[in-house]
Image (cartoon, rainbow, N blue to C red):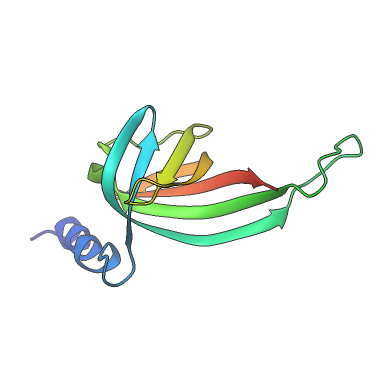
Length: 119
């Protein structure tokens, strides 16, 4: 077994283990719904937005999260910056709509930085 194969196997067995770190969600990206995607969502936080003197959107916050999943679980596509990315509970309840702020794929693992506006 090659090093890349071992890392891929470790990602599947440990990091993407729904009994340890991962959760299962339905994902909608680019008009396609991917069901029962095993993923890790971390660093969910709210922060004040950067505002200008002409911005009157008081009480609106920027919500950020980091999303990890295996490339094959979302059809082999790396989501593109600026695109909508929706996350649902497995029982089909809508959780949140994000926009992809940054996207990377390394060793068949997708890492997305997601942003959403919240009141």
